[in-house]
Image (cartoon, rainbow, N blue to C red; front, side, top):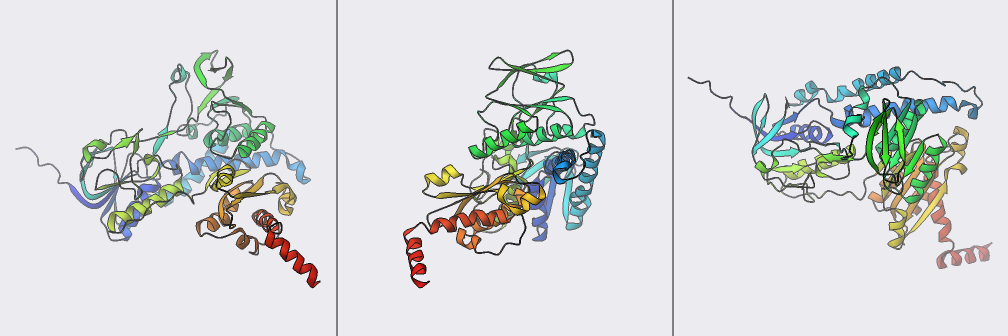
Length: 475
């Protein structure tokens, strides 16, 4: 007699993917009293914990301090730290990552009442998935949150030459003498600065006309100049057409006839949604260009599944995945749906100085009839005394003065942007920002100063000129 198969386990909600989106959905469901489960291939925490936000920012912290140590004479101190132990830097990164990993410990989620299953999952239908080694899980609702993986361009010879990506670099312990980075987006420029500040000769190859193409052109130009001043070579309009190996080094050939030889290649040419092996068709879940298709309430083309995070092709940020998970969970259990919005989402590129942005660009604001106000950080008292007098604040507003967008290039820009994110989210005007008391001396005063530019501009309007005439009469 054959053995009976294990009965399928029944849940109210199953999250596929143990990154931020899946963890938030499963934990939130458990708090609401649902029987929830997470299915993850490897380890809970996803890209953010293991190969993204956490380890990269740990390396950025080390590289930032290395740069400051080498330039200590700018603060009246003796410079130092000409050579650094890359292995020690990587070990410190791993220790920091292990500390943060406690937040995503499987036992923590089991104590919440979440079932944690490890293995590869595939849909059997709209109400069931099979997990390799775990059996069948049935559920009324599924949240697809399987993230994204590096997108590797089909360049002849690239695979044979070998390369790093953000998924593999954190396993290394030796800093190469030279690195060629394919891609000048956020990942590419962040790692370019890290490698250069720790001692590598770095070349960035970007096929577009500029680096950081999602940012304002003046931001891209500003960062281009800054990175070159740090010794990083940047070649734009340089699409890599082939790679060959020559005397143990990789040689990247560009379409314009040039080439770059380096001890290591680092591929940072984007990411693609990860749906491999899920058999989404079995659940009636449609994809376009590899991404799970969702509506503005994050429902997929299946009535039982919602999609969140990078797998949907939306803005690929941890904080976006978290918000999407909250919206998807709410919509999966409540009859009145909530729409997802991306117009108030800030993003940060963690170079030094950081680049932070929310809302419209200056060009978009101008096209909509708005105005952009700018303040240079080299005029800010705190930036001057800290030795970080570099960058600027730009705030765009509509005709009524309401904030429509902002960009900040400055040390700590990711934190400095938040008053403007709040203002934009809640429809506040720049007069409200300018009339708020900011502590002195702080970097966030740069936001107040840029808002003050708006207030000064008001004096050049008809009402402003009338006010000045009244004041002259009163005096």
